[in-house]
Length: 619
Image 1 (spheres, rainbow, N blue to C red):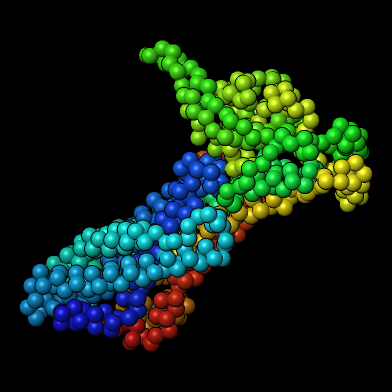
Image 2: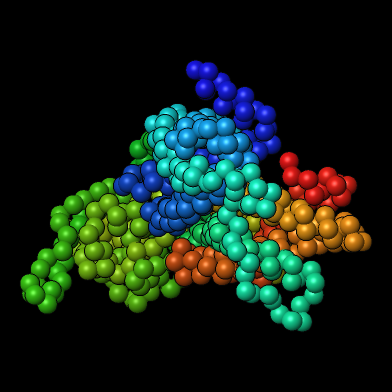
């Protein structure tokens, strides 16, 4: 117990050093735990075949980001832990020299500092778990993105798993620098000229045309090859994660929002019986809010739109209509066949079935412009159907090679679409085909688009007058409200992903600060001599800031390129990139770069103000 308390007191005497390592480790743990909890609530949970929120293809985009960001976060955390333990031991090399000078053997020195490492790792991991839980709690309450049916009970098994993994990882990674420093000879450890991790003088002197400041900065970077490589690797991974989270998050938010807008339609007005309008809006809300719904009789004749009202809407100027027949029915999978080069013709699919929303549309006149895998309706074929991605995942093996059966009719599946309505559990059939199958010759829903050049309010009042004169139980509803809720839901989820890199960025900033501290400590005598012969304090700041700029620029360039490639080519299908998107991404990334550069200058600003004698004296 006395050894433990002595180690704790020793760590408490070095509050800044200990606090930096603990906070850096805690931020790594918090980032990973927050990501796992986010995946459990929004990402991985919805990959199962459920009728919860988000259709499978929307969920796939989120899950790709979560998996990729999780891998990067773990990689970054590993590098950060290794670098922070390296910095911690480099700053304790004099203590090791004193311990060995009074006769302490290597195993005793190793055991003592491993004891300190255990304490620091335990404190950092424990603090990180609390921070991760706090981040998850705040995200739930502030963003309000979690559906009511999702459980808000914290998965403490994930918290325990994260704690154990990072605690063990810290001990495994930290054991090597502790062992290496424990083997250092006492004479070297006590020598003012010895710097742990400092390489011999590099043969690379820089360009002959480079200025004095640049030459010193490059020389210092190459003398600390090990530390320089580690911090560049760490910052490259961090900037990669930041680029994926910021650029990818913004592009994905705009892209997925555009998918929803194309499927639902912008600036549309819904006309129908008030009960039917409420039901249609409820079906749209299934994308962002799950829950049980009461039975509804779609075939009730009171919901059908009369020929008189339909003709009046068709003859109105500045108005375009999209007739739809919305029903619900049992959809059965009809297996298909594929040709295998080795096995010959073999069947695909089974006879699975499921309840689904069935919507009849006029393919050439519909306002919806879906994102489709395969083909959309529109070839004039009466025996074709297009299904939503949730239904495709639920009862089909290879939808484009199979058929479906509805109300005694067999229809060829020509495409799988992304559509928020009923959360993707939907089938689209040509209107005339559905009317013949259901023996209903009238639509029960009209979508209306008003010419943007017309007076919208005046046109809406004219439509309401015609409705009240013929069918008082019918009404108009703006669909933009439901569409904005769906797009806002997507934006809120992406905003949580945008928060992810900032905790990792804070850890990387601490790593860079530790690197600057090592750099200044190694060059303190050189800086003192330069100050003694007339160099101003600003020159010292300029040299170190040049080093930091080179490190950040190289890391930023590589991380940015890899992040853009991963975002556009791997993570997001058919990305939507506009000039405004590029400006928004550029602004965020420039702010991140400038912020971490400014933070890295704090140690040298304090050092440059010291008197010359204090500057040259080692602590």
